[in-house]
Image 1: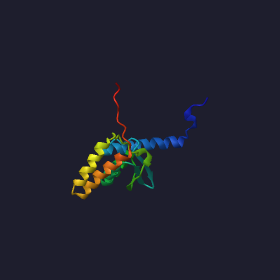
Image 2 (image 1 turned 180 degrees about the horizontal axis):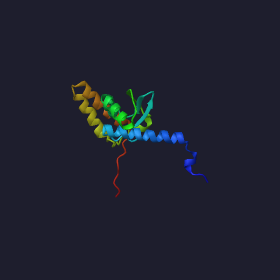
Image 3 (image 1 turned 180 degrees about the vertical axis):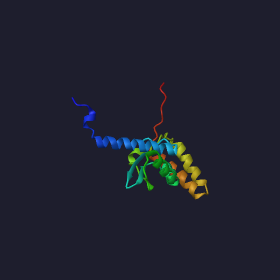
Image 4 (image 1 turned 120 degrees about the horizontal axis):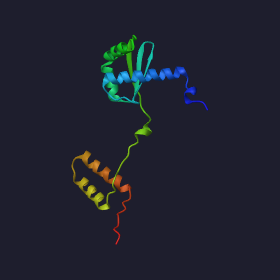
Length: 146
């Protein structure tokens, strides 16, 4: 039986080590935990950093000159510039979870009645929407066992 390392290409292993080192240096410079949040690469003497963290992207754009100097000094290379690209992650991972508790019919009717008496159009429509959302879900009251 062969060891798993046999199947890993030496060039690939070296590039992954460089990626880890580059990520650690960027994380040290920004003082942020960026595990699995950035994907840096160096091409044509420019650093390209892909990220899904908008906070980091903004900070890196403002500090790109100092980041470039920090990496040049730490890696003994000559980077000409830094490009920061914000990428979107798949929407499925950001699924919205709601923990709604059901409303009774009486509560829904009360909300609708209050909404009719409000003169502010936006607030009235918001209350009506809340009542309608909960009205589509059937309310099943919990019955106490005797």
